View 1 (spheres, rainbow, N blue to C red):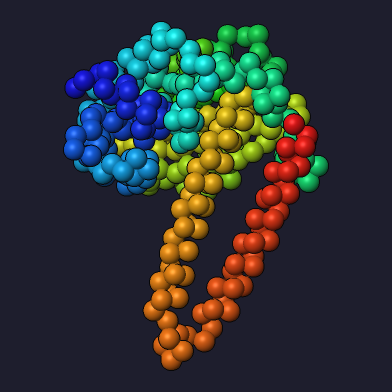
View 2: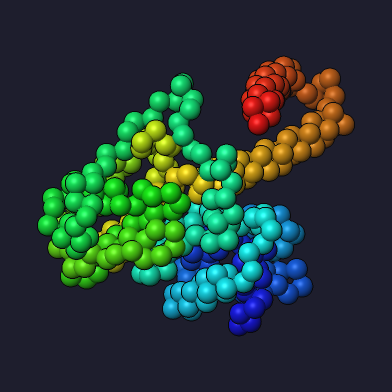
Length: 339
């Protein structure tokens, strides 16, 4: 494995946090084919994501098995590499927080260079709830024991413990809680902006499961055990700031474990811009395909073969799309005037 080539492919093809989240790794490109290392070869979501990202650059995929140890060590090496290289003059367009919050013990992360650049951009760093029509529920947070060692929080009941943990991860940037289940106990790792802050060890399994259930309750997931990976995002308000919570619950042989990512401030703005870019790209692709299909219909339809209701139904859809485009233009123009 050529580490330098892998690092370049992470920068150029598959973003770091996506590699972390989906447990994948771009290994090499040969003859227009991207060799993709996968910890779980049967992960359909990971394959679909990688195929989509590779497709944007006209690469096809060749998945191959990759051990979790190799995946962990390569991403750790990439972190060291990315932290030691000179900062770019502006954020790299391929860097993305999309779908990136699946941790492995101490491997917890963000893209340091982009985060630093974002924090220097004061207007963009504001994520204050300003839309009066979007009233978000407050996030249940407690900071009563903020000055106490985090290990002492393990004595609190599950609902109170989760509130105290949320109080600690709500700094600007990316906060993360990894609820790791082991055979005889659970533990919680707290990181902030890619750096481990504290660990709560040896949590009794019944209490650990109660914490998982509290996370499900917070994000309105059913409380029954999951049989496949479940992901959910919710928005909440904290001190008049918009906060995004991204929860991923994973079934294991020992039971459920979870990762909660909290985005706020510049990190949230960056994530939202990346999501908007992805949606815009998808919308353009769909619009292009629609145009192609209408052209096909135009060239092949005859008065006898064409269903009578096809054109009116298409026209109705187009009118709705045109109205939505007009509204989007108004939003864009309003934002441009304010900035």
